Image 1 (cartoon, one colour):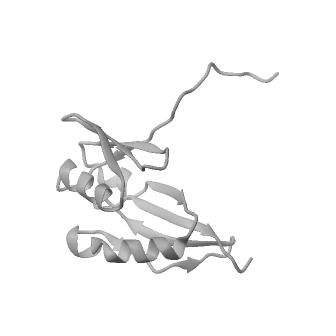
Image 2 (cartoon, one colour):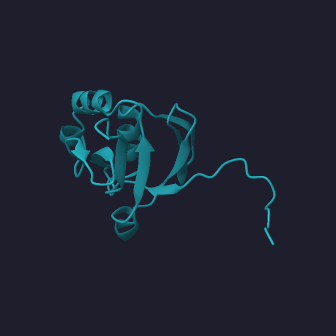
Image 3 (cartoon, helix red, strand yellow):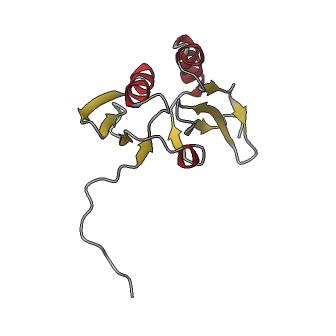
Length: 130
């Protein structure tokens, strides 16, 4: 027997903020082209401007942050690489790291980007060689 749940309008993950506070995380996500759509003392709603949203929680949780990953599939990874490098994110935010595009054995090219809290963003697209 298949069970069908009532309608769902949206699912948004809660992402922990930077150990330096919510404002630093907000600034980071604005630097990569996202925008704040609602902000309170304890939580902030972020819109990617592509129809996807998530919540920044005004609480740092090292264990959660360092084990959390967000997958972001893009149309042009090379364009994202240039865009991210121009943002000087590693210089602006302590702990932020950006990898070069990596061809993974499962057939995707990925840029690994760690946000100020340590959350790992997988920015990728199918490998054009495959």
